[in-house]
Length: 191
Image (tube, rainbow, N blue to C red; front, side, top):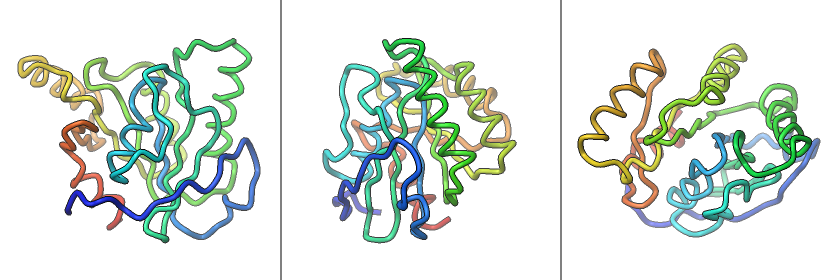
């Protein structure tokens, strides 16, 4: 695949039931903990700054829908985990994510679970893997921010992540260098 920008546009943000969920276009859902780089990864796939990204965790607060190549949606979910928010806000986001993934009626083409390569799997990530597996949602795990690892860290961290993820495929990714972009694009556009 080449690195030219994809045809993509922001469609809308939702906070609950909406007709876009019933739209028959395939949906690729991006999830992960706060500050893992979901929006930056989406922007690196699209080839332009479309998803809101920030160095401050928790920028995405609704379900953001982007129409890509006029034929599928990228859906950017709020991050889970340590965002500096009230307990009520965190519970709201947790419920919103769970509703969208498991109870909204959306037909998932693929869920992209993004983890930080330096941090490895967190308890939240393990819970997400179990829930996606139990609910039979097809997913891929992305070890993001691999460019922030030294060569020695890279080998040991990626080995540990592969062991922790067991039977689940992992794509090594960098939004900065675009390592892993072709592999992820192939899964998105061929599955």
